[in-house]
Length: 116
Image (cartoon, rainbow, N blue to C red; front, side):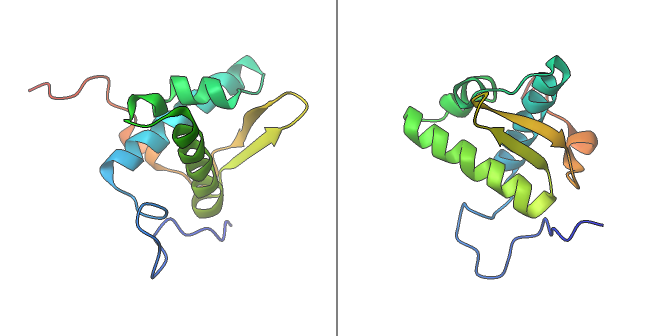
C-alpha cells in the first residue's frame, strides 16, 4: 500500500501542491506521454516531454517550462507514488509504474475542448 496522499498538505505553497483543473489535465498529459515512451522501451528526454506534454504552450520560457516539468514529476512521485525514474546515462525519464494515480483512467485527456 502506498503512503502517498493526493490531497494538498495543510499550508502548502500555492501552485506547488494544488490540484487545479489545468494541473490535472497537465499531469494526465504528462503521464500519457510517459506511457507512450514506455511502450517504445526507451527513456524520454526532458526537452521531448516539455514539447509533447504541452509545457511550451504556456506563456513561459524553456527554463520555466523545465522547472514546471520537474515540479510536476516530483508531485507525481511524492503525492501519487508514480515511479518516474531519471536515467542519467540515457538522459531521460522512464515510467516504471503509475502508482496510485487514478485520474488517468477516470477522466483521461480530452481530445477537444469546447465541443457542445
